[in-house]
Image (tube, rainbow, N blue to C red; front, side, top):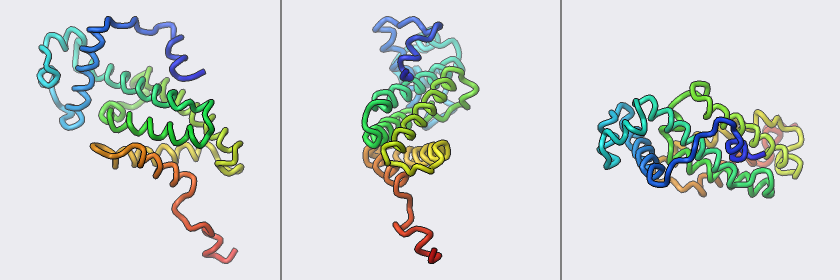
Amino acid sequence: MTVQKQQQTEPQAKRPLRADTERTVRTILETAERVLATNPTATMEQLARAAGVARTTVHRRFATREALLEELTGWAARQFAAAVDTARPDAAPPLVALYQVTANVLRVKTDWSFAMNHAAEEAHPEAARIHAEVRATCIRLFRRAQEAGVLRPDIDLDWTRRVYYALIHEAAKEGAGDGDPDALATRVVDTLLRGAGVPAGLAGQTGM
């Protein structure tokens, strides 16, 4: 079951917003991400001004600054889940899926950098659940890649996942602003699969 499908079957899923309300909320959240990424201490009044709405409108949707930040974190986590699911990690050929997941995730991490890095997962239950589901999806994708001969049969898949996450984190920092997610994804996947050593590797240096 994909991350998105699990979200849709969650018993306490939020009721959908009216189209106009959803547009207003999205505008506020996108503006909050943009402003807070450069000024993490921005006030609700500053966020409202930047979004082009009245402060009362922001407070009507989010009672407190903390409530806005919590929703921003959840919103970014849902974009993260959608980015992974769109790449069809359980169905597309493993190498194609790996590249597409990487490119999609890099877009989310650069577009929503403040929200993605704002809070520890355990402080936001929805984000924690989504990230746990994405980790499980990643392991399944790596297992498929292993079975297809893309990854070595003796590789530790959880260690590979952690290295992959670290590469994505560094690529997202490099891509902040105007980086090309596709080019960065190619670099991440190439580094993950080929490493930084020459083909002979350690054996060529030690005479083994």
